Amino acid sequence: MSRSIRVLVAEDQSAVRAGLVLILRSAPDIEVVGEAADGEQAVALARELRPDLVLMDVQMPRLDGVAATRMVVEERLADVLVLTTFDLDEYVFGALRAGAAGFLLKNTEARDLISAVQTVAGGEGLIAPAVTRRLIAEFAAGPARGPAADPTVLDTLTRREREVLSCLGEGLSNAGIAERLNMAEATVKTHVSRLLGKLELRSRVQAAVLAQELGV
Image (tube, rainbow, N blue to C red):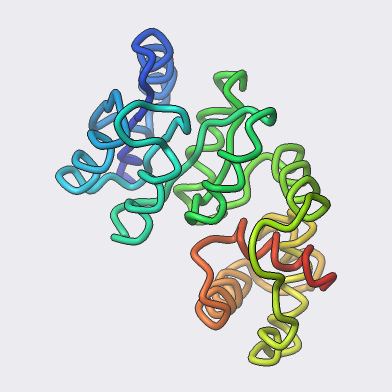
């Protein structure tokens, strides 16, 4: 029997948090190991419990979700799946820069929440294509939010890694990339891991945005 996905839920609104926990606990392969009501508590519990994934709201007291995400990712405590709405661009982009592995709309259906947690915990990173592609498009089309990407960073990639990066820019999953490039999913995962390391990126979402920025 496979091990359950250990999840920490960070959400300051108690009613919303209770609803998220209830939904997640309905999935046989997900275990909610902790609950946090603010960003500081989320980071502290992530250090203590070492969950597989933190479901992180962006708007929280004491320490916001963006700062908390950055700390969790930098300390390699867990993957972070961010709860967001698209009218809060500064939070979305901040979480992306901080290394969030995925983004989920707050009004998502229960089954999609469970699926997103399973997907991110499985290493996919990019979740619902409709969400991911909209995020990438808005980020790429928006005003500059930092130094422009340097095209020479791609010089370290092999031809195959560039092809995989291009697919990430389209929001494709590992399975989608495998089908597009006619290779095994395990091989895709290896290429993704290597290109993230070479480009010094924390997540597939960051790689997807870079692909968009550079027109790969």
